[in-house]
Length: 279
Image (cartoon, rainbow, N blue to C red; front, side, top):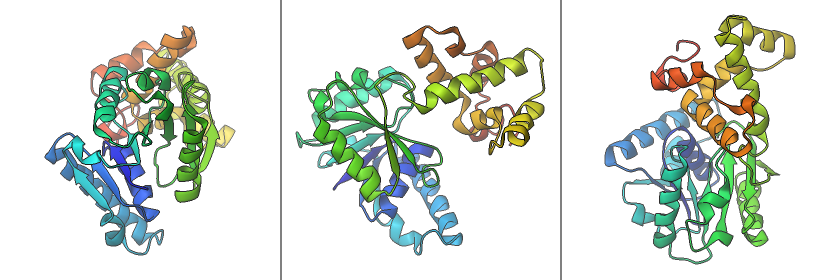
């Protein structure tokens, strides 16, 4: 299978890494040569850490299976392309429209790593909605085993089966089936929980440290909800909340004002060095 990944940020780099670690050559697209170089550096650091920890034998050999490009046309021969760009419906829709005209094989699968946007909205931007589905990985991709498979109403069951074979057979991850509704399974449960913690902080009910320690020490969570939001990225957290609220109009899905202001200020969590906590 020839695999392509669009985007080499945290998620795209992780998807490329696990694909290459599975022995599959992968072409990764970034919009500029500078972003492609930054993506390669991100991959190098991650693979070096994996080698140091004994997770892989040869980081250089894995990296040799990854080709970074800034020309989207380089994905023309791919059998599977996974989109992992910014969580913006309009940007993703335009990308799927372009990929539909670039990827030549009518049997090629176009997949999105979106964490919340309904797959049908992306599928109808193409002339092959039967070959579009969601393949949603979780951050950090090399560590977390779960993948959500999200077929739309138009997805061919054979395409979903091919995606499952890739996720479980090639990558060795665990796939769960999700309905094509905003948030899918995990974020439909997780994001309202995180938003509740943000509202608790915003109201002055408790400090960020006490909220997180309460869940870590009292409920055996590996990390608290505010630290988790920082890891996910507050911009991504807000984008998922916006998608959930747009679809269901449930007030608990609406982003709290504090979250919106932090995103406006660029306080996006770990990737920005500051969110609910400082890094």
